[in-house]
Image (cartoon, rainbow, N blue to C red; front, top):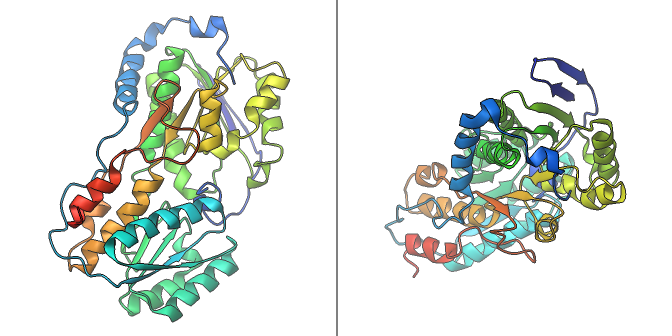
Amino acid sequence: MSRRTRPAGRTRTTTTALFTTAALFALAACGGSTDADTSSKAAGDNTAGVKAAEQVLAQYAKRPTSIGITQPVGKAIPTGKKIDFILCGVQSCQDLANYFTEAAKVLGWSVNKIPTQGTPQSVQAAWTQAVRDKPDAVVASGFPRSVFAKQLKQLKDMDIPVVESSTDDKAGDGISILIDGPDVVDVEGRIMASWVTSDSKGAADTVYFDLPTYGILKPVADTFRSDYEKWCSGCGYDKVDVPISAIGKDMPDRVVSYVRSHPKVTHIAFSLALLNVGVPAALRAAGLQNKVHTIVNVGESTNYEYIDSGQTQAAIGFNNIENAWAQADGLARHFTGQSMKVTQDAQLPFMLIDKDNLISTKTQFPLVADYQAQFKTLWGKN
């Protein structure tokens, strides 16, 4: 779906693609410089909006120092717990499971990783295995409860807690805690909008490439548009929905074609960093590397390398590592007879990353440098 909005409020709508998918983390977990006349445009009537955007940007451009949880567990956390971790079929979910396993080791727990291929059938089979295992808890990421509703009810009846993250579900009715749900990740859209507005000095023309069937990305896209239109009044805006099949295949061609046919575009925002893989090289080959500035959501190593080399300008750093340790924190509170609300309500860190504050390009990195020490202090393990 593409909607280009102009200052006069005209809207054009075309259908690009629809697709079916399992979850965000089945994907993710799962340009050069702007041309001179764009960067020199005055903010005009957007002066107040630019100032407001810059204030938000300044808040998130600093590396976070807190994991967002401050209340200690305060009780001895039982050891020997057995946790089933259901994977999603891609490396990023394996990474998340590995981070959780590191936290579990600190707490004296064991983790059984159950693989899937990311299909509904394999996901249901994994949840069925978890039911048979009767673990002390189940952890998963990305899959909506509709895929495993039967197994979720069975686990609930057995009083086995389920920890989920990065889905568009809500906690309750079998899901004991949801971390980085839709009421949290909207901040990613706000940070991206603040960067585009600030970078353009309130004179942007932006295209937002989205994967709309991923429910967890909807609040990101919605917040980006609302804040962008508030801060960058009258700026051009277009939203283009793309299919999952474009990733790793024709996504660069789609971007080049769009930029060529929309010569006024100054900024590109991607709802997921993987959409940008291969795009900088395609823009360069088309002679368009100096046409646009780019920002991606849920940054990863390839895009951090792009930022380091000046081919992409910014990324939203996601709390993938802190997220996994927070899952363990929630279970630690459950196993000590406490509410997991402390963890549920925590404001985990996010960060706007550019070339000036880039932490690393080699591996996925924690946003909070001493996150392990902070969690261990909460758990009485220091």
